[in-house]
Length: 496
Ligand SMILES: Cc1cc2nc3c(=O)[nH]c(=O)nc-3n(C[C@H](O)[C@H](O)[C@H](O)COP(=O)(O)OP(=O)(O)OC[C@H]3O[C@@H](n4cnc5c(N)ncnc54)[C@H](O)[C@@H]3O)c2cc1C
Image (cartoon, rainbow, N blue to C red; front, side, top):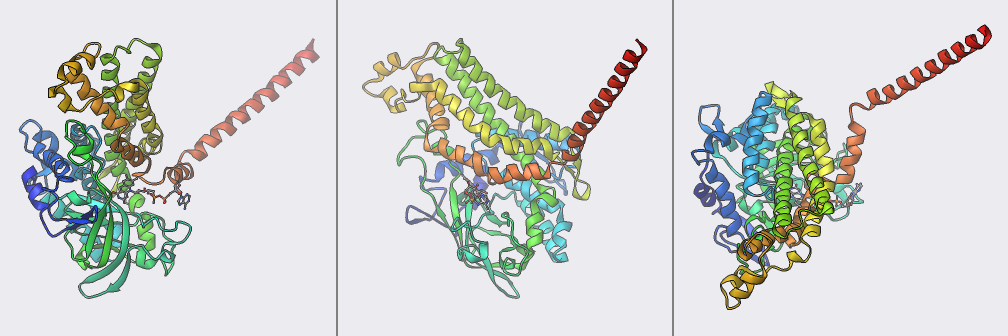
């Protein structure tokens, strides 16, 4: 099925335990700290029902039922293109600023479902569980949060010596009991279920086994609670004044498991550190995820470029050479990311059970380069905007006693004060606000520690041997040329 926004909002009214500012939130769809974000996600679901967009956002699922395209198991490069166009549509709707919109986890889970045999290595039932779970998600069009990382307590120690990480404490006929904490679960208040996966590399040891699991449970499961960081928008802040902060702060939480019972049918990996360590790469799911988030990165880079181009026009700086130079760097970022996504589709490779995987090499380029490129995009907005970014009153000023002053003194080169204020509030929110700071942090870390990812990229780069050999081959041909040349010179001298 494809849910409507209303069905999505209704599904969030359950017994979930969400805590913020020292209090429990009883209904995230009504609390002013969460309501605008819940409604923004509801808009994404509603787009699936828009007559013009529906063919671009959905496909006929296994039983012919309309299904969100982020659930598709791609069987060809054309399927990858279709899925990317769907993701791009949702991402453009949010300016690429909602990294964990539901399509992110839909692509994840579908990748795992396609590779069910991998999970069956730990026992046949686990392969069946992941397959059934993916069918369930697809059928109900659910939103998931996920958590991979253990609490940042003491990174110098192995997980079992930290005393805070979620661990299996008991096994019963009904399932496994999990106790401890996990960070971070972005989107948790707006999700239906939480997927709990291993990510950090676990030692292959008896001590690591209680930490080696993968499962998924409903948000309203008994004993499961979430503590949110403070909301970003100041209390009473209007959406017009905080266009991103107020509507698209997807929220980050710590997940606490207080002796939570996870039913066996929701367990996908059980006490298997080796399977946990290989889960993302060996299943090919990492390729699918990178394809999704590279598309998010493209939408985000394009949005920031759009902001910068408008700003340059608005205050008449677009003719200056260094301004054009900054803008060309932004264009390069957009086109680099676009080319990598396209190359990954054209050069797709066979995946599990008849699926295709987007090629990982161009996507790994985006994964490891974008954390460096994104702060530069933000910096360019700051450089071009300069004090114009703080020369922005709140929208109330446009209808207040000083409205005439504002209309006169806040206009731009070719733009009314009203539009200039709108544009520069957007620019502020993506470059200078707390929202902007969180976005930069997100781009640095959402896909893992960039330093360790860079190291892995080097270590696993498949063309190393070929490229090294090419250099030695060239050196050999150079030496041969030299030997031949000298011999010729010698025979020349002897002859003369
Ligand atoms: C805004 C935001 C949203 C996020 N949302 C989610 C989410 O929804 N779900 C989820 O699962 N995760 C999420 N994450 C977490 C993300 O996966 C992690 O931030 C990332 O994997 C890095 O881990 P860490 O934050 O624990 O950093 P740490 O591992 O604590 O690293 C901190 C610093 O120490 C260094 N360091 C630590 N250990 C080592 C080591 N062994 N070797 C070398 N250097 C080391 C790192 O390089 C880094 O500079 C989110 C993160 C952010 C910032």
